[in-house]
Length: 260
Ligand SMILES: Nc1ncnc2c1ncn2[C@@H]1O[C@H](COP(=O)(O)OP(=O)(O)OP(=O)(O)O)[C@@H](O)[C@H]1O
Ligand SMILES: [Mg+2]
Image (cartoon, protein in one colour):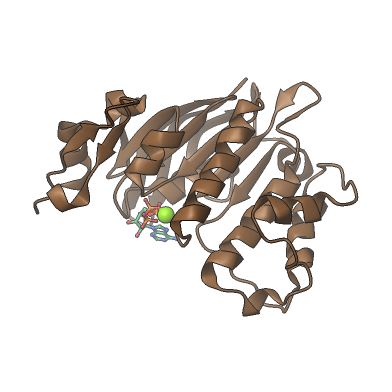
């Protein structure tokens, strides 16, 4: 089972934001999408989830998403946007339960509280959302998404987590915690696509990495295949040295070795 996005093109006015991107993610894997600011990562997630008008085709678990009911899609995949704005004062638990209302994950009692515990926010249920710190708020949003697709496999079909910069405002411990949640979801049979800026976390946790640059996918492969000096220079326009962890042979990139 897989998530296939083929030939995705998006235009904003006269500008092409995506110029025919093809992405193939598999259940059981974490796929990271990396690339510079403005390269089209969020636009691609938006096209995959149907919020951004596009040309091309998206097949989820073998079925075209076009024509599927919103509730049917919500039961199969949950989306963490890069930014979330709320116009009304909600409590933390109300936000997490929104995931249950919009999906059909089975509003088993306690799922919302389990999801909060999973992101390290035990005891936050009744706190006003707008009083939270940036990182706490981000983890509440992740809990909402987790609650929506709590079981990584349902009715024999994988579910999907589509995460746009899930660790952007988190401290290092919570970055690791959230990446482990993604890893566990995939290991249990679900599929994860995560937009990432941290190349080292991507190398550690992703099975495969897709590199976007200027609206095109310029590479897809394992971290070792993709994270090379040449590819990173091409994508980001600066020189970055890739080394490998001696024990695990996982690539790592030290920013202080960069030259503009
Ligand atoms: N609603 C919009 N209207 C017009 N242009 C847009 C819109 N949304 C995005 N763009 C443009 O499309 C391009 C891709 O944007 P996108 O948000 O997908 O980038 P990104 O790779 O997610 O970047 P970042 O790492 O900064 O989040 C950018 O040049 C952006 O300015
Ligand atoms: Mg973005």
